[in-house]
Length: 127
Image (tube, rainbow, N blue to C red; front, side):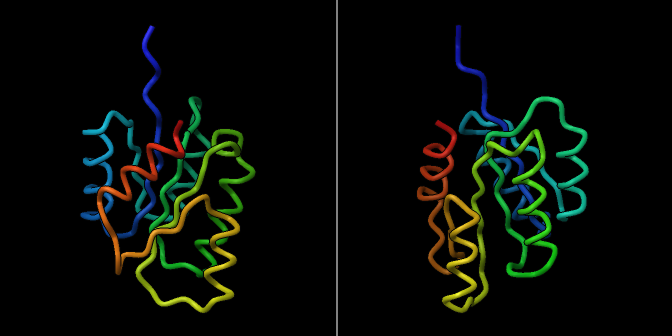
């Protein structure tokens, strides 16, 4: 029997970038589900019956929408065991970055974004 494909929730307000992540993950054997906002992601999570192995969040942290979503993902039945990867392109203070690191298994910065590192991070966290 083969291993079930891992499900990844992608939250990104940039539709093209979200679709890029989804395409790349799909080509690497994952099942991506996209949400353009934190609110839509919460609805997906609340209605989901299968669960997610990973959530990739590319919202503008540290906004209230970001923290509300992280809190929801950590408590919801379908995502409470899912790892969180945060991708950000904004400059953060040391305190903000440390807070994000505490709530995420990985933080990737768009300034030094490498596709291979993204794929390796996702694969590692889904094993």
